[in-house]
Amino acid sequence: MGFYTSIEVSATGLSAERLAMDTIANNIANVNTTRTAEGGPFKRQLVVYAQKNEPTAGSSGSTDANDPARSSAGVEVVGVVNDQAPDRLIYDPSHPDADANGYVHMPNVDVVKEMVDMMAASRAYEANVTAIQEARAMGTATLGLLKA
Image: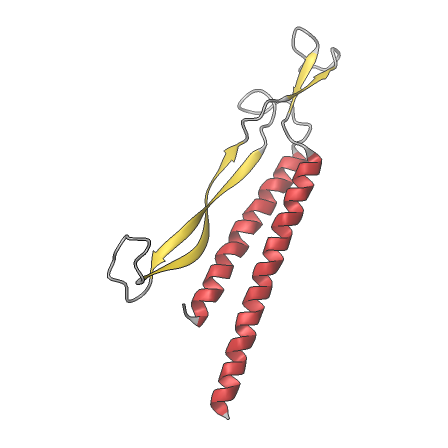
């Protein structure tokens, strides 16, 4: 694992956590959206992550994950999926989107959970920034030693 590889790994984390924070912000913004273009209430969205494996420059092209010629290259976002949790039901017969029984199907978004998820994504983002800063500081220190 080289100097630049550690920065690249942290950079993939930065990108993934930024998308997660954007998705969480979208969930919070739509907490009261009862009618979407697809029909029905807004569905909470979740980010799906996966380990990103890429062969190193001198790799033999092996697809074996245990091959030492392969390197973990961070994380990637596989997609954004809708949460399949049931809608929240609120009794409000005067609401324009109320069903025959007077219940309104509200989005399955819990603002408290979203805020906790946002704090976790923010802390992970900060950790990746710190890792990049430390890798850069080590590189600078190494260059300083080589000059001496």
